[in-house]
Length: 102
Image (cartoon, rainbow, N blue to C red; front, side, top):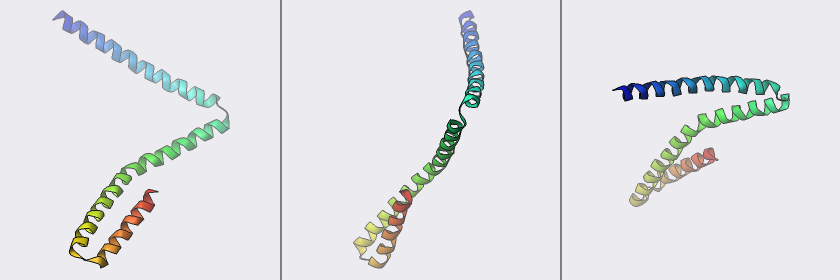
């Protein structure tokens, strides 16, 4: 039983120390940003902005590729049944998804 208590005390101390280190790292980062040349700060801000946009767009990319797959399945089924008029519209939709991907 005492080993269990010691284990929990040790884990608590490690977690407490880790939380304090994270706060200090944040303060250190803020201080380093203030000491950087304005050009480098602007570059980092621009990089962060680009990455935020990237992170927002990536989930949409998965959806686009899923839609492309569904459209391709429809094309394949229509080719089997010889419905060519709708097939070309679906192929164009796939091309638009691929252009959006680029």
